[in-house]
Image (cartoon, rainbow, N blue to C red; front, side, top):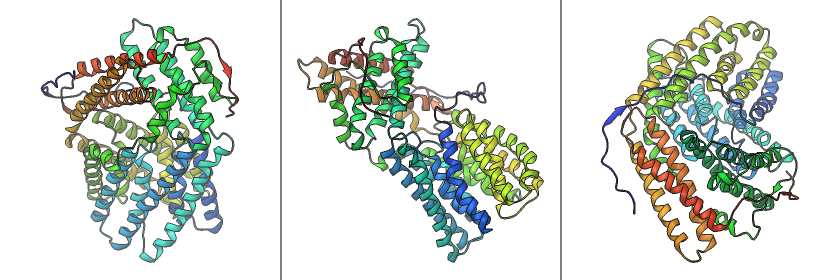
Length: 558
């Protein structure tokens, strides 16, 4: 039976974190790939424009070139689709911005259009889970284009430049497939194995650490399954080999005491290397993988269904960006889109994370203007020096941003300032002053908008996620209670329950960081997670997936 829904608790304010906000983390496993892709996609168009003496057109080519920053964690079959959609989204936002710029000179109207575009870009990127860098790059380009002098006759040519650069970015993003066609799904599987090993290696007496590592491992396993589900039909053989390794990560979640963490880490190391996919002793009759085929055939939630819960976040973005732009105009700043983009970059899943991002953005931008002041004399030596400095900062931004957002901002800020000089050298002091003021205005107004526009639906989403977990757990338990449950049905139920548990943890974490929010049913969430993971463990035992000692190498190449 489902636990009755408790009465809503009193509304209270959460504390905003400060400790650790600026602490650098470990770099991404593939930090160098977005960094190199950024340089490879931006350099040829910019150098071509430099040779033609038309650096003033670089904003339009960069709109397409920056699409290469997306989808680096996705299997190549999915990456091809996602990159194409990103290019279409980038060009679409640019088209709206250029059309508005050509039809009106009213800065207030342009800021309003920019705020609405930013809200739409935020909602769509979150609903589709596009991944880093999310909506920020899209908003940066469309907001800057709003304040670029434009006529209706120029729009087709400028859009053509963006499309051409976007096509080149698509090729850059897909190029690693020639060298390592299964790299993304291998990395996702390795991350699941490492996360499961971390959980299995956590001392049984450390309840808090075990709960944290179990949630992280469950999320990594779910991400690995999603990565495998996104592979194309040509990768079927490799996918099945990787599926067996993900199954072993699931075994570790179900029976951590019987798991050898070193063995899991060894398999993970083999996956990130260039050798064949390790082979496990998982039964190869295929029964345990039937749920994958069921999930592949299951319908996906509609875009409208995924957008509905994001309405408060979209409203926050629209209100915060508009107010930041208006205040920048009132202060006489010539580039209100800087304040607009700063506000747009803040909005995360909840107010606590938005606050952290605001602190990181301000610190990174202030440090970045100091870097710009130091580099400006070198960049002003000539157009070639300007382009090369931008490329260096482009690489640095992508290399550092995975360690902490503020570190990436230290490079993004001087790069953005230098890009404004593609049309002509400007006074560094003026640029620095305007950037500092707009950063402070955007961060302050953007955060106040996040506090003012409350997300009352966060608690409802937790209740919905709880109900889903409880319903799926009961369904899985009924299947287990039967004498001989159908393997496909049991696997489908188990995968649905695992996905619901990951969603519950993400939803509870997001809701716990909201500012004014009724007390969350934390105890009920904990009980639901414990019961859900026990049921998952029972399905694993029922399927007979027990750790063995044999490991071989399957002839599937990277």
